[in-house]
Amino acid sequence: MRALSIALLVLLTAVQASAEQSTADESAQLRRGARMIWTGVALIGAGALTVPITRDSQRSDGPLVAGSGLMFAGGIVIAFGMRERERALRPQHAFQLTLTPRTAAVRVSRRW
Image (cartoon, rainbow, N blue to C red; front, side):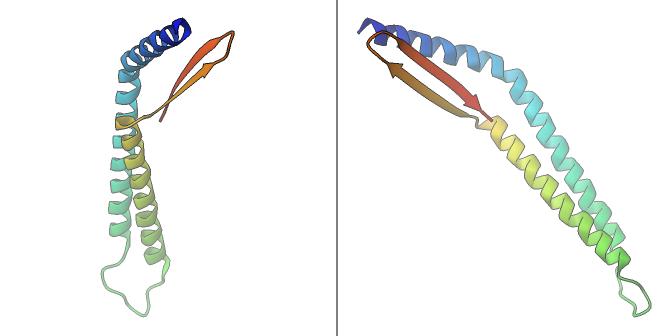
């Protein structure tokens, strides 16, 4: 009983300390995600400007391929930016409690 109460006290203290420490990490991760999203939007815009509006038989496929590639890369960067923001807003917590006859241990981990 005593070991369980000590483990519970350590668990609550660790979670509180983790919550206080994570605000700077969360804001940095949110900024990084926003930068990635805006970079992706810029790539999509650059790709849209590169793609020709009308297609002639004399034109090459170079601008079309380059523009499509830029727009595809922009979409991927936006998806990664959204995932980064999601991880900052909803981190995953893992709690592990180990009780043996001689020791009691609590492990708290937070993943992004």
